[in-house]
Length: 463
Length: 79
Image (cartoon, rainbow over all chains, first blue to last red; front, top):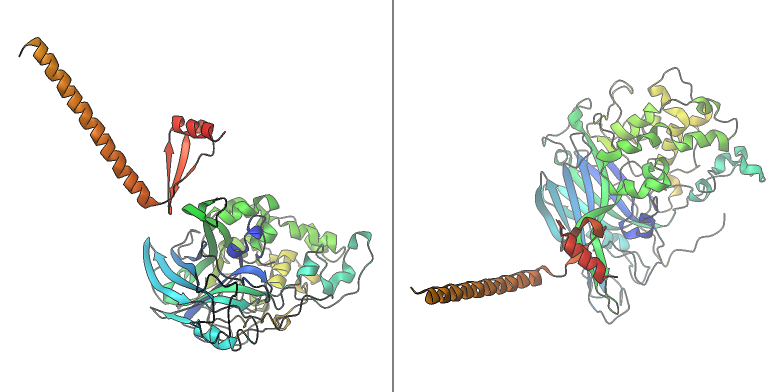
């Protein structure tokens, strides 16, 4: 998945598992940038009685690099606390929750937002309320209203939301993890001697699941190094690198015969996310946990996995005869290094750059001077839409298809014009679109859809 | 001052000084105990006792100290 359960250690710690990161110029408020950092993969909407919540023992951060060194220059830090109104009750709620201060709601969450810049900590707000999870028509009869109450204004023209949202990352998990058997092309799969299947439409494996989102909208000038408002797409000052992280304290001690848990020590990073699928697809199994513990500035050691991605070698094997040119492409993939580790320099795509420099660092790079597209393409830059992935990432961008196509060689001509991509490189997909997300998306902040209610959700079926 | 008297003075002075040291040590210990009580639980982590490096964690603070004897003592106690 994008970064859901992408590494062995973090797959056992879902509360701290960053699943997706989005960063884009807000289409309805183009003087601002919206950054959404998701956690807790594959929340089943009916997953009570202890419904999903942020970890009060986790420190969540959105990190901004505005000088290209792969280290954070600006940090937005989110710390959560949980309150229980009636410890003697087993209930999440004892009646309908009609407002965020409802006495019927037993277990609430609140959070603080702190901005850290040049070592200076500025608490932007404390005691901000999260919405409850969407439970059902009796418990949360007007969920849209509850969610809208949880959108909070912050000083400096900033806006924040933290709480449950519909999963917007659409991906055919079942087919991809079954040896890359992409349903629209499964008739072409090698199948390892097993019977071949007929091509079929994709199935959105995350549909109707939920996540927990931290969504932050800030003026563009909040992110630049000099506080200016980016105006020129060619200026290095217009580009920022973004990544999410989650940390836990170094030590945890459980006392026997007690509910007491003590945590101590420095905050230690356990999860990181910049570009979707980076740790999942380009870092070897034995190094994924290490990768999660490091800052982007340490990514040089993972460059080989980008220059020679395992998946690029697998595609011609899994789909015999479909990727003949890719099979012969043995050179280091400078195109992928540019897209994922340095940013794309000027001169490769007319009117576009999001280069942050020579430091190899996995960051979601956003050129903030590129205005929102009037007619967006879900294929972003590959669809000639300069406002989409890998220029930041919007909630509807088809990052699975974009990255599959890039790895399949579609972007290699950017650095070697003599290379001709295979026809399949421009077509490969898991067969999904934003329409595959039943809950849809919002046109305004926080952009990800209203989460599915637990009562309204049927268990998974069979394809 | 006679020799015996001088010796007695030296002894008394030494005893007084020792007493002051004990009182000082006690006061320091009490101050340490008060400060430690304020810090809440303390966690010590010794990854490799042979090196003597001890990581001490309290609250969000974390310091490293090197004390081979203490590290060895703690390692023995845990056996």
